[in-house]
Image 1 (spheres, rainbow, N blue to C red):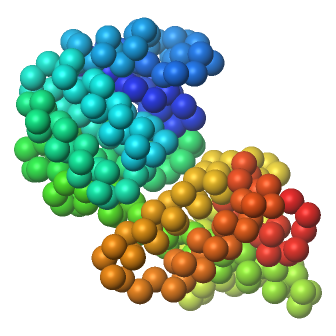
Image 2 (image 1 turned 90 degrees about the vertical axis):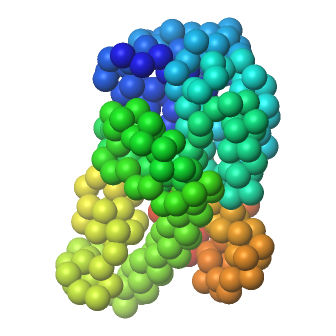
Length: 294
């Protein structure tokens, strides 16, 4: 049994922490939202009154927070209170530069660290099938892997500090672009009189095949588990997709990389969010492309 502090118990953090409890670990949790703490208690977490209290006896600290500024603030607050040699795992999706600064804070306090953002959404968090993209030293990754296992379907060591965030940003840029492409094809198919099922049956077994189509189809019917069958209740909200696409464009600008489709995807999701679509699943952008009132 490992003593794990888990800070950030929202839609992703709570089920992730619950899976660590199920695996037999002692998990001490903290969050600023009372409702999140109440749910965490139901999941078997021990609740702390603040961040420093959560980490003071922890062998491992996991954070799942909204943005880089939150990660750096929390690391600055809790790192001095953690036992020397403890392992910090940040599973937030943040910019690469902030991730590297978080690693530096950990090192300055005698701690090991990895950045380990995830893919798989709330469904994967609940099922323990998330993909973790890890950045950090080989030694830190070796320590982190058995801790991540109860939450994971796949764990990939992507490289040194910040490499996990780089992989996540690139992956979600692909996802945002491909979902728009799939949605546009269905909108065109509707105009041409094609049924959703007919287009799915062709494209899912032809060169148009991709995850956005076969696993997360943006129209109801062909893929029963997709959010389109639940009025676009989010597995991964459009607001979060926009956040990740903005991160990809900030990274592209800093690196001098040309990403014209990524830029266009960010613009379209920005418009979708501005019209009120931010709380819907990101596949709900099909309604924006149809010109429907959001």
